[in-house]
Image 1: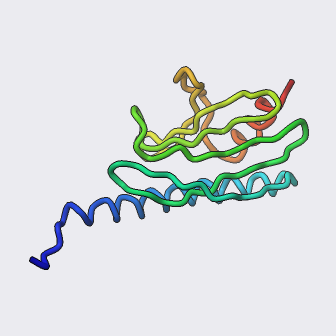
Image 2: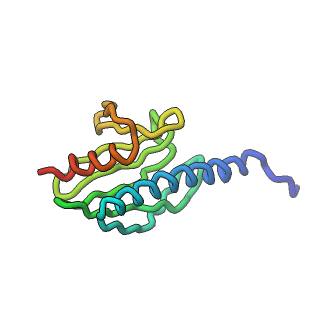
Length: 134
């Protein structure tokens, strides 16, 4: 009695690590949007995952010319990758997946095809243009 279960502590450190990784990429995306003079707002989203628990994640709403782009974290426990963020637009309803694989972020189509662009500011700005194009 009174002994902590080491397995119970693991989700807390895994959650903290994921929230840190997620926060960093969301902050980068927000900075890139602001550097492009696109208005950005944040709203919290609660995500519950079996192994890492429940946590708050920021959703970005970005207003580039031609529409809206939403950057929405989906979770860390996603089949086939180590985390996923959806990037979608209105009014076109196009969506691309930003997935974490082997410690880095890559862009994939909804069907899973890899978009051969190195993830960074240039890829993000180009992606926003493509997503909001009529």
